[in-house]
Image 1: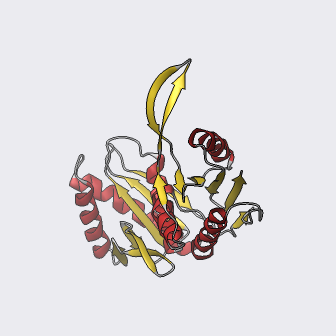
Image 2: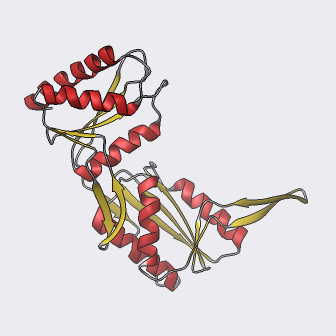
Image 3: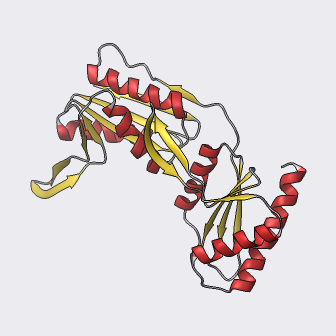
Length: 256
């Protein structure tokens, strides 16, 4: 961390504690947010509050990301006011903002405890790669089109977004190839001859001939591979694709 960032983060930490001390405990997130903005104005710290960062694919708008604060064009702050420890989903939310803004430094702040809790996060700029993004010619046309959709996503966004973002991007990419999508099809389950009723499978069925399972930010693609094989059998569908949009690697495996 350079000297400018070191001085800035030290000052911001002090400001967050000052805000909580004066405002008091148990206030809303928006109350602390407004108070901290006033503190930064008084201390001549440049910032943007809740700026809008759109995400699009192939010139089609998909979703807007709205971080709480961008400070001095160098730091993302995501501010919470929860009376308990923050969850992994809160950390992932911060990383989404850091990826979209291109900033490498972020603060995840919880004002809702007896003492302000501040997590400092770094996001290294690393090269991403994709693996096995070339299915065999023996696979169906649908599988080829899915691959084209994945290439489009990778070319525009690389990898490293969370499921919340990818669940919005994927349907846009698939629909652009005029594919029909069924989300979470239901099937019956049985045990020892007993009908256990219907349950939804966490997958997409595309053009009624390919099962598609994906995860985001997993360390490997093994879980998807196991699910795809199981779901192909349950749905009696001949083709499948397992995809993990990892932190650094987009990994794809096809089944038939």
